[in-house]
Amino acid sequence: MPRFPDWFRKSIWVASAVIGLTLIIFSYVHYLASWEQLDNMIVLSLIIALFPPAIVDYIEFRWRRSADEHLPYLLRDIAEGQRTGMTLLRALEEAAKRKYGPLTKELRKMITQISWGKDFNDALDNFARRIGTPLAARTVLLIKETARTGGNVAEIMDLASGYVRGMQLIEQEKISELRVYMFIIYATYFVFLFAAIMLLTSFFFPMAETAVGQVSIIKATITPREARRLFFHMAIIQAFLTGITAGKLSEGKASAGLKHSAILLTAGLLTFNWFVPMVT
Image 1 (cartoon, one colour):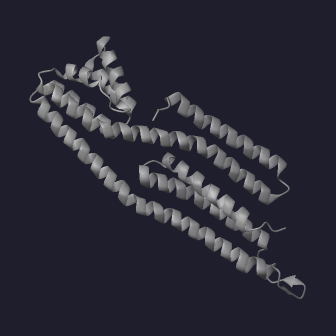
Image 2 (cartoon, rainbow, N blue to C red):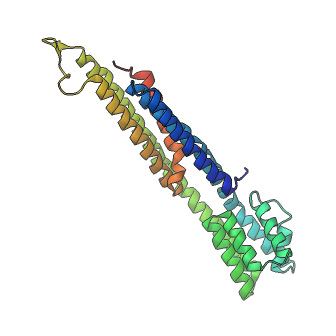
Image 3 (tube, rainbow, N blue to C red):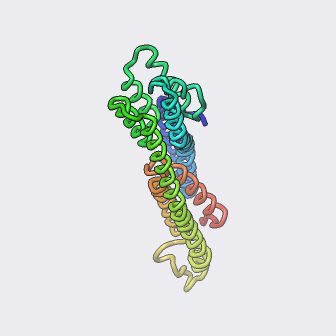
């Protein structure tokens, strides 16, 4: 899976924010007379603004995860090269000729930098920085220390490969366990939507039609239109914050929750427009 450069990711964030803000201002100017339509357009603008950064963030996440998955194979091949009598640098050069998914391009770039005279440790640091994962940083630190201290490099690389693989298994186990909580987060939100539909269609709307002395029973407290808007706002706020929480829980960062927020916002918008009619 390809990786987007930093400037492109930042441009997507800025462009999405500008487009979203422009759509919100446009909606406010043209739909101010109808609060329901204004709310719909604002939520739709928010969804449009969230989706591009969410897609870019997801692609970046997949790229980094694939890079981490190939690290044990890289270390294993370095160890094999050491057993045949190669130096560490020569083993890295030979490894760069093989396929390691996203690591291949970055590894070849590192070897090219070294061949042009760049310091070995600096090239390794740049390699870790481009990968951008904690596991890659630990792996590079281990390679640097191994090159500095010497010893049985092949055995150290084998142990490192096993360590990295063990860390990946722990991460996979954590993700499997967190899937249950992700299901709970989504289920909770849809339960809220169902409860809102039932309250509005079975209580607020019917009660508004029941008149006592020409006065609606609930007119003195809250109208059906106000109740629908209140529940709609609650659903939108919950969708956004729940999505951010889901991203933080599953991937450890709030930006990873943008895709969940976009999905839940879309579900809330469609639910209220399909199942809860607008009240005049």
